[in-house]
Each structure stands twice: as C-alpha cells, then as structure tokens.
Amino acid sequence: MTMAHFGGHGRTHLSEYAGDVWFGKLDARAKLVGIFVFVIVSAVLTDFVLVLVSLAVALTLVLASRLPVFYLARMYSAAVPFILFASVSVFLFGGWERGIEMWARTSACVLPLLVLAAGTETFDLFAGLRRLHVPAVITTLLMLTQRYILLLSEELSRMSIARKARGFRGARNLLDRYGVKVVAFTAGMVLVRSFDRADDIYEGLKCKGFGQEMTPWRRSRVALKDGLLALGLATVAGLLLTVQLGVIT
Amino acid sequence: MKPLEIADVGFTYEDGTVALKGLSMSIGKGEKVAVVGPNGAGKSTLLHLIAGFRMPFSGQVMIEGRPLDESSADDLRKHVGLLFQDPDDQIFMPTVEEDVAFGPRNLGLDDIEGRVARGMRSSGMETLAKRKTHRLSYGMKKRVAIAGILAMDPAILLLDEPTSGLDPRSRAELIGLLKEMDRTMLIATHDLEAAAEIVDKAVVLNVGMLMEGTMRELVLARDLMHEAGLELPPISKLFRVLETMGYPMDDLPVSLDEAVEQLTRVIDREGKHAHAHIHTHVHGGHEDDHKHSKAAAGERQPRDEK
Ligand SMILES: Nc1ncnc2c1ncn2[C@@H]1O[C@H](COP(=O)(O)OP(=O)(O)O)[C@@H](O)[C@H]1O
Ligand SMILES: [Mg+2]
Image 1: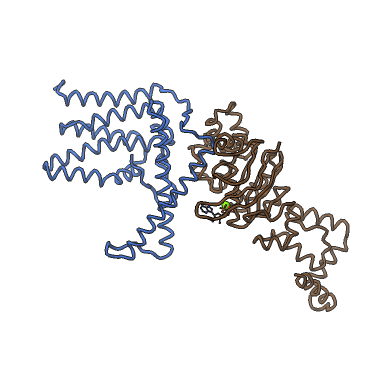
Image 2: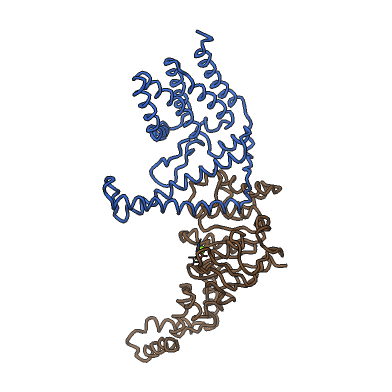
C-alpha cells in the first residue's frame, strides 16, 4: 500500500474522501475479497488483450468509485517510479510490447488497490482484515505501521518547513557537501523525533486500555450491494482467468 | 483510602537527569490539585509515573490503595485517566464518537453508549459525535481526548498542561469545563491563572516539592515564586500595583472571579470613598504635589523591603 504524504499542508489522511462516496460506505470485507481476487488474477494474466481488458476494468472501477480522480492520480504518481522501473527492465530484456504489457498489468493491479485504500476508512480496512481472520498481530501491526508512517511524514514536513524558515535551500547536488550534511542530519532528527512520538502514541494507546487485539465493533453486515461488488469483481476475474487458461476460446 | 498517595518518590532518567526527588503528596477523593512549576520541573514525569509508564522509581505510589509497580501498572492504569499535552497522541479513531468509545471498548466495560454520551456531554461535545477527528481544531481535539478519558470513568484525572496551545476562547471554555467537573484531578501546569480558577490546592514542584498550600498562599510567597521561576497571574500583579497606590487590599486575588468578588466587597464597604480614592490617584497628576509624593512613597516602600 502506498502511504506517502499526499497533499500540500497539514495531515492528509489516506482515506480523506472515503466518507463522501458510495464506495466508501460498502463493507470492507466485500471490497477486500473482491479487489484481491481481481488483483491476483490480473497479476497472472499473460495474454496482451486480456491484460488490456483488466486494465480497462480497473479504470472503470476508478471512475465508478467516484473518488476524486486527481487524488488517485497523485497516489498513482507516487507508485510510478516502481512501475516504470519494472516496465523498463522488462522492456530492455523483452522488447517494447512486453514493456507496455508489464506497465498495463502493474497498473491494473495498482489502481484497484489504490481505490481500496483511498475509498475505505483506514481503520475499517484493518478491522475488515481482522474479520477475515487475518491474525490480530498482523492487523495491529499494520495499524501501528500506518500510524507511524503518517507520523514520520508529519515530522518530515515540519522539519522541512523549519529548515526553509532558516533559509536552507536544499542540497543542489551530491557534491554540495554542506547541503548533504544538513539533509542527512535532519533525516536523523526526523527518525529520533518520530521515535519519541511513536512512544507517546503507544502510551496513548495503553491509556485507552489497548492490549493487542483491536476490537472491531462497527456492526457492518455484508448487504446485497456489498455482495454484488465482490461477486462482480470475482466474476470478471473468473472470466479473464478462464479465457487465459484456454477453457473458453 | 485516598485515590492517590505518593511517598518520598524519586526518579532519574537513564541519562542521569534527576527529574524528581523526595516528593510526597496525596489527593483526597473529589479534590482538585495543581502541580505548578517551570519547564523541566518534572511535572510531566510525575504524571507519567503515576500512569505507570515510567519505572522504576524510588519511594511509593499508591493508587486506590494499591501499590504501583511493574506488575500492577497495566491494571492500575484503568483507574487513571491521563490527558496528554498533545491530543494528537491519544486520538485514534476516525470519528469523535468512535474515539470516545475506543477506551471503554478496549476495557470491555458495560453500557458503552451511556458512557460515550456522558463523556461527550461533560466535555461539551454532544453535537459533534459524527465529526472526523482529524479535521477538528486543536481545542476541539483536546475536548475529544478529555471525553475519551471521562468515558473510561477513571478514579483520578491527570491533566498535562491542559491549557497550553489553546486560544483565549477555548482556554476559557476548558477552564470552565474543568471547574464544573466533579472529579478527582491532578493538573500539571505553569498557567497559574488557570490553576487558580480550577483548583483549591497547589503544589509547587521543582524536582522536589517547594511548597504546598492554597493558590492564595502560593502567590503570597513571593520569594518562593521567584525561586521556582513562576510568574504571578496578571490579575494578582495588577492588585499588587493597586495596593502600592493605596488600595485597601484585604486579600490578594488570584483569579478574575476572586478579583471581582473582592472589588464588590471593598466598594460596598468603603462606599464612595474607595472610588474617590482611586480616582484622585489616577487623575491627580502633578497638580496635586502632596498626593503625588505620597503615592510615590507608597510605591517605593515594598520595593525597598525586598
Ligand atoms: N526522556 C527523557 N530523557 C532524559 N531526560 C528527560 C526526558 N524527559 C524529560 N527529561 C528531563 O527531565 C526533567 C523534567 O522534565 P519534564 O517532566 O518533562 O518537566 P515539565 O513537564 O515540568 O516541563 C527535565 O530536565 C527534562 O529535560
Ligand atoms: Mg511537561
């Protein structure tokens, strides 16, 4: 999951817009199951046309979710370096067609995951995983990690503002020894400070009687529309897979 | 049995900083006590120690009659509600209502809805139940944090600099809230004015305890205040100045309420006389040499004493 700091000022939550759209109101479990099935199948498709079809489905999901496209695009752009890296290396070894295929396949996997992450209240997402019987240690760890990354990015932006306020322009290149030194030093500071704050937050959790288990309580039931979404995505995935395997030609 | 008893407590950080030394104090049921002291006096350390986050320490801390140690810390923490200085460190859930319910649910308490409703009512948040916590203002976040603690119904409330970082309006609201609240509380602060409004008793802390008494006794102990690096509340300063100008002060007020009360009393007693007296001093100016020099002499007197 991409958890970089999206947004210009203050703390921007990953699921900032989840509450405003229909997709955000669906049951987390249904979304998790549907999207994961789709993503896994998309990842193993090898037929170029099928890959393009799955990309089209992913794009449809993006638009249908009604999440702000600019927001998803910004999240996607954070993943671009990785996607490019994969595609370019495939291109170098397998030619341009394989390269484009790789890019399409990766995007078909990444986009639904972004929709899931942005379109689900982060806590619901972890609670959903827990309800799908993912061990408590893992969901709790995920929740804390998410919180920690948020905190890191917060400290980071604070530090960079503080640096700029003191007239620091950034290291122009790796030979700018003073600049590099400042950057390295502040990076260390950010780590130390977020470590301290993580400590505080852990104490905050303990004050609230938090043990290891996060108790999911939103009594959300899988309703018809939740089931339909999961079923729809699974059906598309199933079709793609059967065609891929040559059952239907 | 008192909710909190501390006997000869000392604490030293890993790096050798002595944060607390030989501290003894206790809080009775329903009592509100302020721990005042400058930055670095050990106030936060003390609160964290009571909440069972810092161990080991020398001496003894008793919560609800039970000794605090490593093995009892997690259990005793249920009786202690610590309000952090930064509310962001103790808000975890997406909406206000859910965050307030978070603690009671973790503890497996009964009647969660009732608790949440009461917690939100006593912190004045009832209309904001569905709001997103991360979009609230700083002052509102503090209130959410307080509501979340109240919902757990702790025997003692520990508040770390509750008024810091608040704008004047939110500060006044929070002070009003804490003043009305019928709870045992320990407030760590350097905001003497706020403390004076809320608590009956105060402890001056600077690593060790310098003094214990009412807020009035505290502001009257000028040397000690100076030694502890504490500033008088502005209202007390104003009355000190008035006193040097001949105002017949019977008690140094430490909060606005007290000041108003005293002024009303003095005006009642002295009638027009007091009014005229202050009037001549304020507007007397240079024309009236006699009165002017008298006022100047009066002004010098207390300074010479010091
Ligand atoms: N984690 C720590 N490690 C070492 N020293 C600390 C730590 N936290 C606080 N101190 C020191 O302990 C003393 C008391 O700090 P603190 O309890 O935060 O004071 P206050 O809350 O009254 O401002 C200070 O001298 C501070 O520098
Ligand atoms: Mg402090």
